Every structure is written in structure tokens, then in C-alpha cells.
Image (cartoon, rainbow, N blue to C red; front, side, top):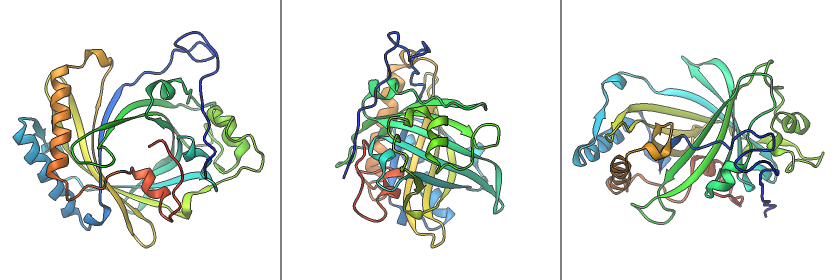
Length: 304
């Protein structure tokens, strides 16, 4: 069951959106290894995985600075995915989620909306204009995401995640995210997809996700390529069923062509070596979002 469409930028000047704004460029590399959620049963499990990271870093002579993270407690966030009943968003490479951090058991700060178009084709990802139509502040985060290959340990594949993030408050967005008219007014990229008035958004599989995330430290691959790393587990609120885990590290840059080829090679070698070292932990062929969408079988289509 799918209604996949091709979303291209409306005609505009070469290298720009329809209003002349230059196409967004990738400014992040984020490497992700998806892990078996059942492995995570306590905070000690996070530190056990951290030991694997340190072991591989030492073998490859990658500096791993953990002191600033020592003693930090895990961060807790609630993550809600919204989509139509037949997964129109996810089937067409869109992801819409609401998340909020918790401190000492209570919500902290304002909820945040993350809207993304994620696709293996860089041109398609960059041509999709994700900018919102809201009065409040927003931030674009365009990432190249590295993932293991779907069927084997040690390889890598790329997804391009074109994201916009903004706070959910009265100045920026109507809180009823299930209302299609409100949604397409604020996120014009969804207008071609949600033209039917009967389309309605709901909580995916009626599942609220609890994210437990532990900061591990900073990996230094040389030549200025430093990446903060963390490990996390997603579980269903209520029964606390472990859904999926993830190890990730991320580097932000201004210009891709200014990155050191040697440092990037070291980064890729680390990514491959850690997969081999942690192969008993790894869950191939999915993403965290994919794990949520596949909770009840009959998986939707996706570009992941």
C-alpha cells in the first residue's frame, strides 16, 4: 500500500527555491548505528557500549574525550510521531514529530516540532523547500546521515535529512497538529500531499516514545573534525517496551570541500570498525523512526 509521489522544487532560478532563496546545503555529518533495544536495561548498559567506543577509538588512534560527560545523567525526551492513518507522510519521505525534554519527571521548556524530508538522493533532498510559514523563529539542519548497509556489517550508506526545527508556542504554531488546514498553512511543503480535506493526522500507532539518551564524549578524527557522541534507547511509554537503540556521532561544518580527506577517511574507518566490534548489538536495515512505524506489522513504504 503506497501513494508515493515525486516532490520537486517549483521552477525558480537555478540553484534556488521559487522565491530566489539559495538551496539549502548540507552542514552536518551524522553517523548512526541502530542497536537492538532489548540490550538496554539500565544506565550501566550505556557505559558498556561506551567501552566499545573507547576500545575502537584506541585501536585507530582516535582521541576520545569523555571527561566533560563523566557523571552526567541520561537525558529524557518524549517523542510523538504524527501521520495520516495510511502513512502519507512517511510513504513520501516526510517525518513530522513533536518532542519535549523532561527533567526530574516533569516537562522542561517548550515542545519542539521537527519536520524533515529524508531521502537517499541529495538533489531531491536539497530541492525540497522545508521552510515553514510561521511568525516565530526556526532553524534549518541539513544532514548527511551515515548508516550501516541494510544487510551486512561494516559498510555504509547515506540518507540526506533536510530538517527544520521550531518551538511549539502561541507565536509560532497552532497546537492542533492534527488539523490539516493548519498544518499545510505552516508547512507548505506538505500542501501537494494533503490536498484532500478528509486527510487527518494522528499519533502513529497511538504510541508515545520515551527517549533515554546518554552523552558519551567527543571523538577527534584530526584536522578539526570533532564529533560529539551519544547512545540512546527508545521505548514505548506505558509498558516501557524497548523499541530500538542508537549510537551516533555528529560533526558540523561550514563547507564540505574544506573538510580534510584524511580525517573523513579516519571517520569512515572508525564507523566500520565499530560495527564489527559491536556486531552483537546491531539491528540492521532500520532506523529509529522505521522501528516506530513498524510496530504493528504491515510496514509502510519508505525511502530509508
